[in-house]
Image 1 (cartoon, rainbow, N blue to C red):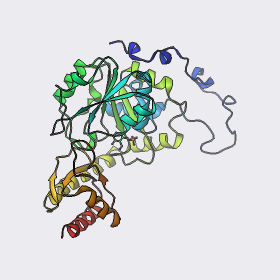
Image 2 (image 1 turned 135 degrees about the vertical axis):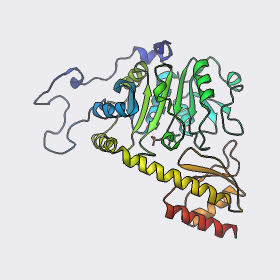
Image 3 (image 1 turned 90 degrees about the vertical axis):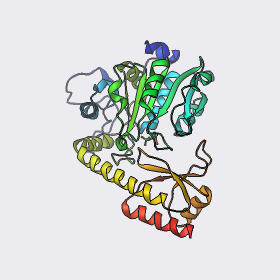
Image 4 (image 1 turned 60 degrees about the horizontal axis):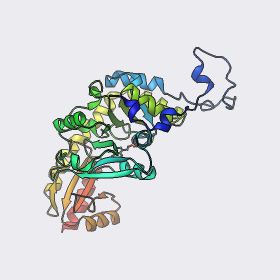
Length: 344
Ligand code: PMP
């Protein structure tokens, strides 16, 4: 597959921003090229624009090459750049599988890119029969989210593979919640699918939402395109340092995941026992989707109690559903106590 043929022509032909340090190999003693402040401060210098130290650590952890990684200001930056790189404004389309994460269509709309939607099946899996009816020659990027937000389930691996084989454009698999799942990441499949982009993030299992660091794993050809159009210094020094620290301490992330998954199962059972809860959907993420008798009323009641959950009742296939993040055992208990009072 020729990735270059999928890239917007103006992006293919443009010259990216360059700095004197791009060309310079080796160690310099004096840097008078970037108009920085020369006086000591931990942050007087620009960060490494390609974040090589973080990528090398991450590559070893994920079983990919550093050149197959793009790092951005949250995975939201990756979503935006993928759309900008591959979709011609006022002409091309992305395809999303509803219900799903909201930023795919927001980024498309900001970039004047059309959004085509195909519904998931009632059990929130891919509806392969519906795809050919929805996409057309303008469809350049397909977004799959697994585990899916807001439904919590993994999409079927066999169906994802089918999509990867059949779709000629870029296929993004957003794995923001993969650490909480029983299934395997597609990041190890890059060699088989040159059009695949896997998104992951430090915002969930790694406990670093405030840092804003997201990852794209893809073929070197795709990563080169994203690097070409990103802001020069898109990941700041502090974020790079703290990401390196986190990567030194994978056990911490794993311990959190274990605890959250345990609490998720406790909460699924406890919620199911409440009379206002009609159904708790199985989850491979760090949240639960619960169908309740009156989602909006329950949401407002909880808000008045100082507890914020997500009202997803106006989202396709999620009628009367709340999306509830797994908190600490104490927080979860407070939610249950409040919900019991509401039922009474
Ligand atoms: N993808 C999904 C499915 C998400 O739920 C989120 C955050 N809620 C993101 C991507 C964005 O994550 P971030 O920008 O924090 O990496």
